[in-house]
Image (cartoon, rainbow, N blue to C red):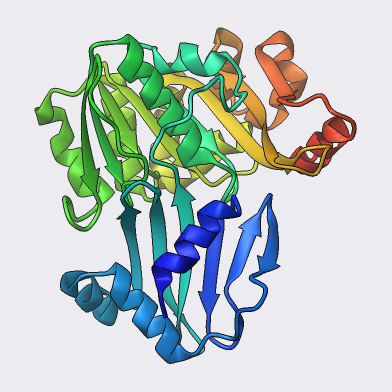
Length: 334
């Protein structure tokens, strides 16, 4: 079992993901569709164990043995970086591998809305990127950090699980902390990050009450905080944050959120009309006075009826045939 050969094939085919499971051949995800690697036999449990050992060190293997879950970053010089998740299913190991290019794409190269540049250069506040797993949230955040790096002299600290894109200092200083090897948890890292003189804080994912509360506090105290949530629309991100807190705290959190929220981008990746490649469709909610009011007044569920020009239910990154209708279906708009 030579895992490097499969990773090189993954890059050669332009696949975003590689799935390795027992009793089936290696499977690639290309342009959003799963495709079995032709000519490859079903993998055995020993194949998976060998592949796992080729991409991990002893500490990582010990962690997996204890937790039965592991996320890690892996690089092949001159090829790409990879985000690897190891888990167990039906008493056998399973590997899910995401390709991460060495070069961080720009906002323009990805065809993202220009508002991403504006949000990235905000001096303070909270900016969220939401969407389902595999919709490019981490890449969108990486392009925003890259834009900061090229245009502003700021101290940027990221907390990631695991580190995906690796940044080189340009105008900014960027410190990247890996969950597991550099810090024990998002919440623990955030408790100490304000003593590291940051201007910008990137949180890979806001997973729990303590992380969300600390992120809001950091945004309140004059820092720009970027993070992700798993919600299918921009307004639902607001409800998700507030619902994490106990009822007696929700009114205070609603007020705080209305003051610090600068923008929410909710995105999906759709296949291009040509069938080759995918494109991001982005739903945008900006922290305008109208948005802040509907958050405070508990009317965020009717945001599209209240916000008018401040609300863009669908932003089309690609105007090819069929894309507009696909966007409407993807976001649940008629």
